[in-house]
Structures are given as structure tokens and as C-alpha cells.
Image (cartoon, rainbow, N blue to C red; front, side, top):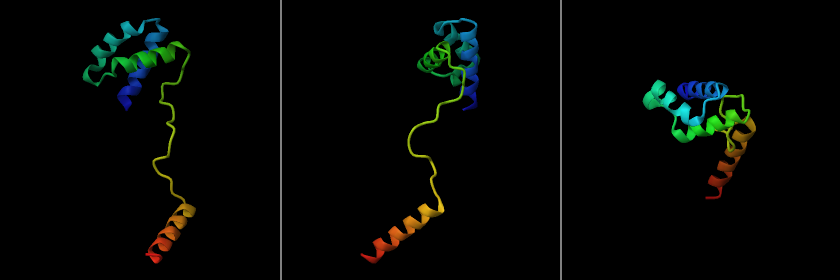
Length: 88
């Protein structure tokens, strides 16, 4: 994760130096070696920064959060399980 963040910063720097994506790729591969982002990802980030994006962090992903528990949710699940086992 940290390496990809460093690479995004490097891509942003290259964009500010007016380097093309094709010029940026070999530089990143030389510096980051096997840990380098794919060409496709470099092109994607290069385009985003060229279009004015400033933030190097990933966007929040849509969908269910990895953890979602609250006292209310726990009570509902317990009630549901108790109801389910009583009717079996």
C-alpha cells in the first residue's frame, strides 16, 4: 500500500513536469522494479492527475463496510436466531 502511494506521488510529480505517461512508465519501473504499478494503473493515475486531480489517496469504495456492528444490530441478530431456533 505504501509503495503504491509513493508511486502515485511520483506520477503526480511527472505530470507537473509535463512528462507523458509513456515517459513516466520506464522511470517508475527503474525506481520501483517488481513492485511497480501496472502500465494500465500508471496510465489511469497519470490521466487523473493531468485532468486536475490533486489527491493521491484512493477513493472510498462503494459497498458494504468491512465491519458493521452496533448494539441494535447485535440485538436484532440474536432475536432472529432465537426465533429461528424456537420454530425448528
